[in-house]
Each structure stands twice: as structure tokens, then as C-alpha cells.
Amino acid sequence: MKKLRFDMRDIFLTPRLALSGKKIWVQLLGLATGWLIYTVLTYIALMVNGQTLSDIWKIYHFFPYICCCAFPIAWYSWVIYGIGVLAWVIIFLLASVAVARITYKQMKGDEFFSSGDSFKYVKSMA
Image (tube, rainbow, N blue to C red; front, side, top):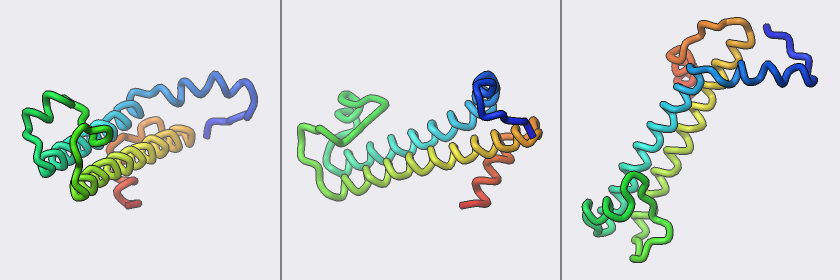
């Protein structure tokens, strides 16, 4: 296990622990998956509300949202939108757990703990 001193000398260890391509990739996968689910569900919520796909695309492009719309939104569209936001938050948190597991294994000395193993760990927890 890497010896932490809990003083100023640990500051130089943190970039090496944090800036790993493996961890950045795992977090990027979590963010991209959450964004994709959020976007699809938000587009569905807006289409169920009566907007056309081309109108939604002209207004929002790659990041649709329901807040601050100029037109009234039905309650069921808000529910679909809320499910999308909740899914994105949950996926982000699960990806953060996977990154934390990689960091934990790295501090224990296992530099070859893979991102697939961390996803398996998260799946076994859920």
C-alpha cells in the first residue's frame, strides 16, 4: 500500500493518482452514457408534449432541457424528463464508484486493476 503521510508531501502524489488515463476513460464512459440516456428521454418528453423533432433540434441541438421553455409543459413530460435527469445522476455516481475502486486498488499496489474489473465491482454492488 502506498504510504500516505497526511502532510504537504502528499500533494505531489495526488496528480499521479488522479490523472490516470484509465480513470478518465471510466468517468468519460459514465458521463457519455448518462448524457445519451438523458438526451433521448428529454427528446421523448418534448415530442410527447407536442413538439416536432426538427423544432426540438433547431432550438436545443445536442443538449435539450425543459426548464425555461416558452411553451407549457405537461406533467407527464416533466416525469419523463425527471427520469432522464435521475438516470444521468445515478450513472455518474456509479462511474465515480468505479473510479474510486480503481484508485483504491492502485493505492493497495495493484496497478493492473482494469476498468472492466471496476465495472464488475459496481455491478456486483448494484
